[in-house]
Length: 252
Image (cartoon, rainbow, N blue to C red; front, side):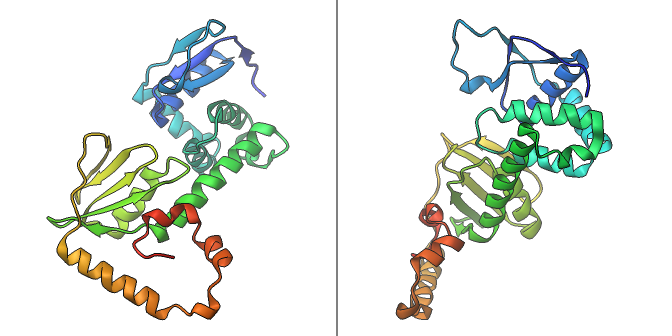
């Protein structure tokens, strides 16, 4: 393993993936391991911490991104990205140590599950990826006029971007909006490019009359095909967790 010097400092960054990769560059280049890492917006100052704000450098982030794929492998890059989307606290320190060791020993790092931070990265990746996969089938779009479709969700993890990429591939010529109500952010796609914005000042239009008609038909179909005697709420919640029900058109 590389010789790394622990320092009693807390790194702050903007909370973005590029911002985190900038920290990885700074830490590895200087052979130092901070005590803590926090997104600046989530940090509560205290007199015990000495903080350093690491400004996002896209060029350095790009170099780290390419370096992970080249030296540790695509699987490690995949693990890092999805683990970063996790809502777990102190994910940054686990990821930083995972990448430190990965740069030393290569793809074999993925088999070192006895190391607590490697196990944590794998667990975070699994949860984020699993939730994203479920929502690919559960997300419900509604037409809100002007050929624009809207969908809302309440995910545990910050999976808006990979979920958006899935639907950009499925609906390449369709304009749509996906609203993460937990973080109050929206992914806006206009058929060519996308952006993720703060949803505070975005007014969500009402659904169109045509959409209302189809929703009523779908609810009627859903109730008609249901067999009351075979209703199994526990099984239903296993495949369609109850926490997602508020974003469904039908009523499970």
